[in-house]
Length: 408
Image 1 (cartoon, helix red, strand yellow):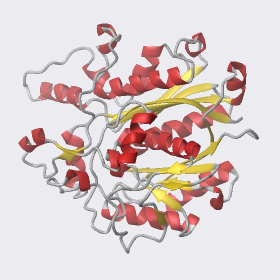
Image 2 (tube, one colour):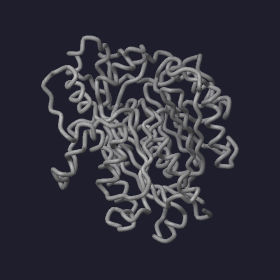
Image 3 (cartoon, helix red, strand yellow):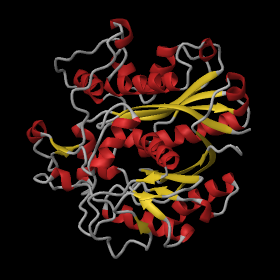
């Protein structure tokens, strides 16, 4: 059964629509800022991140609805609502009768709620209440989306760090493809927290360019010095072919391939062989040759070894002529959200035939494999794009989207 994207929603440092996000990409400047409040953490040496500034949730949300929503769930629930609206399903009764489910995840739940729970064991004053666990639990985004919109189909929690959203899209695609459910909301979210920067900082994987935030991260660049954490959420509406025909709606793209593997070797050291295998599985699932792919969104976080290993795996599958970009150079590493945010960017670039470059890429690291690294926007007319994401735990995902044409 064929599976189509009929809507999407996003909450990002560049805004809440493709138009605002595109404007950010066109400016060629990232959303990275110096976070002065982080100076208080003596064990942290990176003070930069890509925050969503002055976030406001929708004014019509009630106090009752907000009780269980930590910041990551606020982002995710709003993104889901925007996606449902775009798909023409926001007020449709069909989403509440079991025909729609949700797959979503994040690296963690809301860390402020986790902190309050931890204070119990430290015998410190805290603000814990009945919703503290709900805000902090790993499947908080999926559960809150389902409850907020009254969904009664399956819930697929996909809290797998940086592949949370790509897993959500892939598993939703498979659930629909094999006739288990006709409609799914799929994506992920993340809220900014110094604890997440600290984790990468302790691994010597964060950028230290505190005085020049707009110059980092710089994926694939010879002088890159690590990742920068970001935040946001993004959700896609996936539907079966039968569903879109009944509703008489025009899809935005088709999901045609998904591959997922695990390294099975080291928790934080990526492996090119299993990255390559994930891409090959996606191509096999889509029944297309590598040369059909017109552009690859790279996971590329600007870590030293990660970028090298990923470039080698990509070259092994596609050769040196494959156009490739990393959008973490604009929004930072949005962790649980990146798989969906980058899928939306990939789909819209394919639809508009204009692909944006990696910024802050001045000189490609000679240790990175030869690829067509985009440093300027380029017109590319293609029917297929690939989005790759990789995560701690040795988790690898690859998604392929197809352009909608009259022949489709």
